[in-house]
Image 1 (cartoon, rainbow, N blue to C red):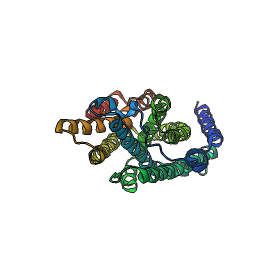
Image 2: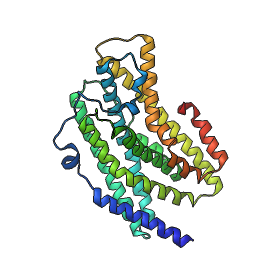
Image 3: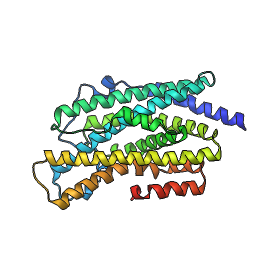
Image 4: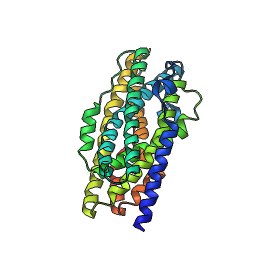
Length: 311
């Protein structure tokens, strides 16, 4: 049985390598292609921005909110990919003198994450050149990566799997169907999605492999680490939602009353929580993977801890 499981896993690593080779893309040749972001169009689709909650905004203001959120959405991916690349490079060493197929798959994964970081740095610079000055992305990638990587490998892989699964859902359900988005912004996430599809498979394989090593006591501690990581992500989202609301209010052409300002901030935070926490935690595939590793009391513990965020 163990040999059969090893063969099945090896086959999945091999399929990720084949896909990586087949869909390999270049930032300039395939994604940017000499284009600029069209500021007459939305960036983030309505399905992710929660814009329907801001009925007092006119069409131009709604578009501006989508562009601010879309800018932060991209920057958050660049942020988390700093720790993901470092973790995958670390994990790949466990395969160095073993399964060379798994090693190649993870090395490719790391290489693609480095490319994604460069992509998101490039597009932030491009957007900054055309949008009004004053936007600030507050979290620092190395500080965040250091904090995340201090937690158990099981928890880090769990957070990573959660992130890379929701990228799939976001693109298929919201980004791809929306015909009103800036073509370049949409293409950024089309090409990102193509490689993240393989990454989510590798996350699951490595998370399950790590899970098999743990004692019940170690797994219980790892569950606590996962809760801590998701809570820390929420802290980042709260900080950035406040900064983005203040930026919108500064660059908008009119003033808003106190109730509207409060609603703007609450909607920004709710949107970011949906994008980066709720949609991943609620993902059916994520729940199935996680539920197969932990006990019912541990699952309930996670649910209780995250309940204030999931509202």
